[in-house]
Structures are given as structure tokens and as C-alpha cells.
Length: 582
Image (cartoon, rainbow, N blue to C red; front, side, top):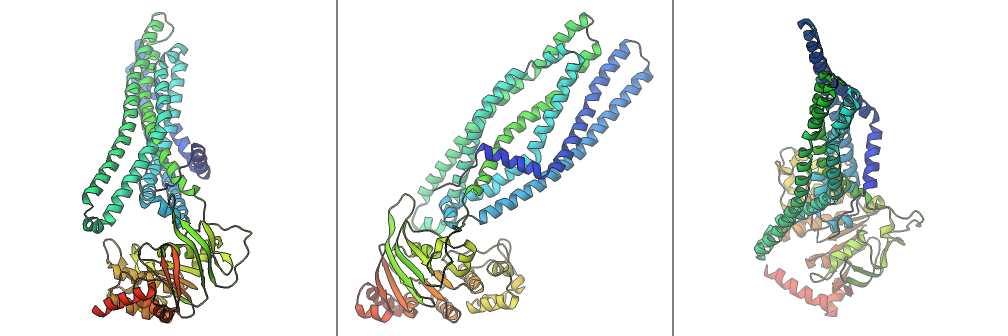
């Protein structure tokens, strides 16, 4: 399996800078409000120290009351400013995350199909769910928290230095151990969290494929093997998370042990200075309170730094989707002429494997109906993918109108060539939503006509017609109904060349025959290449190509191939006998 790429640190930093730049006004408002809240929060310790000095000097109760009211006012102002700052920060975060989700969906939809298939659904599913959510938390909560905590700490330690430089130096007593353990942690955290994300993706892939193929697993008695495989994946995730937990255990233990040191040093140094009348008692009290107040933003800063590592690792995985080269043809390629589909010397192998197609030569004339038959594993579906431009041949060329299919603009290629496979998907939404993917401008009448064309009789029973909701929690379509829905999309898309890779395989024989006959009227004048496992499709085709071991062994009309008494004739007699028995 080829995983999707992961962005490097430079790319992540640039993306984060671009995000902040696009929302610099909102970011500025958040910073100003949090800065004002931090300034308001500096006043209470200083005022409390002033109360101590005034009481020591014999101040009246009225003086103390005024200072106490000032403290209450500053606390209220700080709370209100923090409230508005958090509100503005969440608005900025939600907008930024919404943009990120839209960009991710756009990039994902632009990925070549072959890349998605090689990467596997687990990797992409994890990036689109867990990683995007983690980035959302990072942008909405982590980054603002880190920035504001840094500002608060700067102001708090600055205030201690203003009280007395020696008190300021004493306040830095815990800094060396915190800086050292933070650098140790950051050097190891990024790779550890990337590994954890990759292992989680592998586990998701394993669980998804096992669930989707549950019936096959049971039929082939593969339950124990899948359980062992799943257990191995769970173990690897557990090991990856154990590694990140070990990093956090060291990190937070050292940090927590470093918190009391500055307060203790300030009290010791403050006592010494106080004994020599170099500072007042109120100044020492204020310094101790500032340091006690600094623990909360310092704790937030260090805790969210750990979360930031998760966020940046997830951001790298999300941005990695955009690093896959898009399906863009070379700009110098000449325009295609005509609709003749030609395959010359095509060879193809999947990554790390041997060739599954060996020098395929084939020509399909515009308007011709070609059936491709052969045993399982002969390479029929692989040939269909090459003809549709999903994969490119390792050697040779597949062209339409004299132009390589893979060089066509993706939108143009999909307009001209449509591939319908055994696999089908019903999107969550209405019937209309599902059909409009193929033809956004199609009218309701055209959609109903498309459903009727493919024999979707079940449509008449839907309570709300085209507005009937489909998917989880709504109307569930069976395999045959879902495949007819996919064929209706094909009718609406109206391409010139259709490649049907066992497109009616999920239908029972009578329904499949009815659907194929209904499609016949629509397919007149179009090029149709049908990968067939029911040989009645081959019987109705203009020509039949027999594929075996990645090679075309026979090609001709049904009657000619039967008369030749070769491989196709054997297939026909075998299938025809079975059909008669049914």
C-alpha cells in the first residue's frame, strides 16, 4: 500500500502563516483583547502589594476598601476582556477550520483515482476525520492559547523585573529545566505523533476492509486470520501511543517539578533584600503573587504545546493530500480528432508486481459494441481501467482520436469516457442529489426518464419521489437498486464512450437482461465496451475479444468465434448449457 504524502515542517509553517494572513484582522482583534485582559490581570497583585505596604504604614480602612474595589474592578475587566477574546478567537477558529475542510474536500476530489486506491480508504478516512478535527482544535484553541499564554508570561515576568531586577532573576530559576525538557520533547514528538497517525490509519483500513468483506471472511473461514491481523494492528497502535505517552510522562514530570522553584527563590531573595531595605514587603508579596499567577499560563502553554505537536502532525497529513500531483495534462499535447479508441502494445503492472497485461493491441471504432470476455484474473478490469484513463500503461499507449487518454483534461475525459464497475455508491442525500452528480442541469423529467431507462421499477414506490432521502437512517437501497441508480447516472452523463465493467453483475439474470435491453436503445450510436461475465452480452455485441493471461487470444463476431471452435466457443457452449439448465 502506498500511503499519501505528508507535508514537511516548512510547508506546515507556510500554510499556518497563510491562514493567519488571510484572517489577520480577526487575529489582531483576538491578540488586542487578550493583551488587554493580561494587562488588567497584572493590576491585582500590584494592588495587593500596595495594600500590604499601606497597612504597614498605618493606612485607614477607607484606603484599603478603595484598593480592594480597584482589585475587584480589574478582575472583572480582565474576565470580560477574556470572554470577548475567547469569543473572537472561536469565531476565527471556526472560519479557518471551515476553509480548511473545504480545501481538503477540493483536494481530495482532485486526487487521481489510482492514487486513492493505492493509498487505501483507511489513510484518507483518518485524514478527513481525525486529522481534520485535530487541526480544528489546534487552530481554534491551541494556537491562540499558546500566543496569549506567551504574552501573559512576558508581562508577568516583566512586572517582577520592574519590582526589582534581582527578584526578576530569581523568578527565572525554573526556566533552565523547563527549556531543556521542552527541547528534548519537541525533538522527538513530531515523528512520534506522525507514526501514531500512520498506525491509526492502518488500523482503520484493516477494520474497514474486514467489515466490508465480512461475508467473504466468513465464507472462506478467514475469521481467525483477520482477528490476528487486526490484533497486530491494534498492538502497533498501542505501541505508538505508548511511545508518545512516555514522552509526555517525562515532559510533564520535569515541568511540574520546576514550578515551585521560582516562588521559593523569590521568597529567599526577597527576604534578603527586605532585610536590607532594598525592597518593600509589598513588592515581595506582589512578586510571589505574579509568579503564582504565572503558573496557570505556563501550565497552559506547556500542555497545549503537547497538543500542538498532535495538531502540527495532523496538519502535515492534511496538507499532504495537496502534495499529490493533480490530474493535469501537458499543455503542449495536440487536440484529439475523432472518437476511435486504439490500444497499441499496452503493458501494465501494479506497483511491485509483474505484468498483468502483455502487449495488448486493440482498435474500437466509434459506435461499435465490443464485449471483452475471459476467465477471472485474465486482466479484463485492468484493461477497462486503462481504456478509461484511470491508469496509464507501463509501456505502449491507449489513445482516443489519436491522443493518449491519460493526456486528456480530466473533465474532458470524464465527459467522453465513462466507466461503470460492479462497485457502486449511494451518497447520503435525496435521489435527486444522487442523480445530479452526473448531470447538475438535468430536469426532474430527465432524471425520471433515466431511472425508467434502466428498469428502476422501485422508483414508483418511493414516498417522496426524487426528494426521497437515501442512506443511513433513511431509505436503504439494495445492491441491485444501487447499481441501477449508478446506471441511471450513466444515462444522464451521456458520454460518447461507455465502459461497462460487469455493470449488471449485482442484478438477477432476468432483471439484468431487462436492464441491458433497456440500455440498448440509449447506447445506439455510442461506443460501448462491455466487460462481460454473462455471455448474452457478448452475443449481442458487434465483436468479442477473448482475454486470457493478459493477452487477447481471439477477436471477432460471436458467430465467427463460435464457428472457429476455440476458447470462446468452449465458453459459450459451457455457459449456454448452464443457462438452459436454469
